[in-house]
Length: 93
Image 1 (cartoon, rainbow, N blue to C red):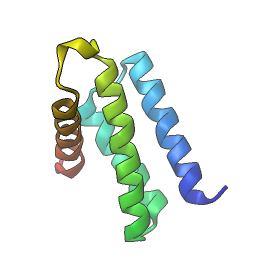
Image 2: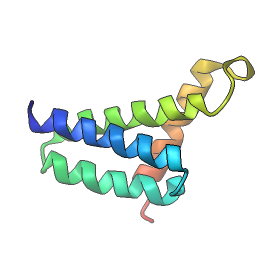
Image 3: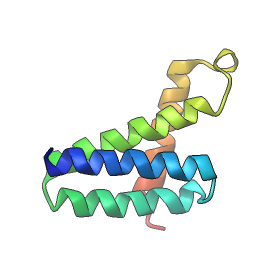
Image 4: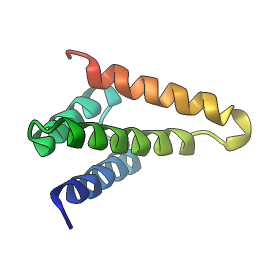
């Protein structure tokens, strides 16, 4: 297993643990994830993009689990989740 796959497994585990405990607000949690992603990518743009997309997928999956499926437009919710993640990720908090 290469370092990118290990980083993805760690990102998945961290997301799952945080959201099962509901411990850290996204405004704090996502910058922590960002720090880990950037460290794991080690300046390699392709790996950085791959890890960001993986984190967005994890964030979106959890976002969608929060609401009963019958109460939302799934495609719009995916867009909203991606936008929300990237807003936190790109913020200078």
